[in-house]
Image (cartoon, rainbow, N blue to C red; front, top):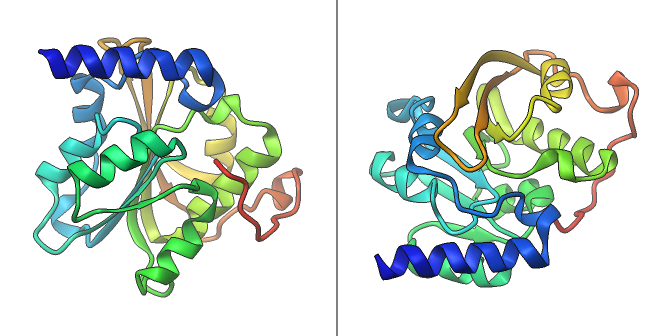
Length: 210
């Protein structure tokens, strides 16, 4: 009980200081975390990444679902939250910048094998369009052909870009979350539509501190 209250207060204080980075006043609910992780074919997932892992609300469900040899990469910008994730999940690798997934893959020898799945709690619509485009490029490039991208958002404002850049397989509404959320289940296209090809900025190979 004390741990839950402490986590809520910590998350709220970080939201007050950095609302665009944190995205919500509370961590993801168990209902949202279960809906996110239920979309992953765990028996066929050798490597997975979580973007915007936060306080680990979804991470703990990933930890309970993975296979014995599954590699897990966590990305969290906030140093305090990242330190906590490292302590709670010592077998997982933690990185500070979700716009540099390719660097993390190289460190793990996954630059050729790629990721089977990426789950995300990043508040994409809070970011400038160039940052969104860079993240989408990185996500698509990091996934295997046919790999899954599962993201929750608090509105449907990102649906158009996700539709253009991925195959949209499903959208789930989760009312039992603060605020209610949409879970987008997307699959990497065989021929990926880059940001440049849909009329946005060219892709630049540099990290953006996300």
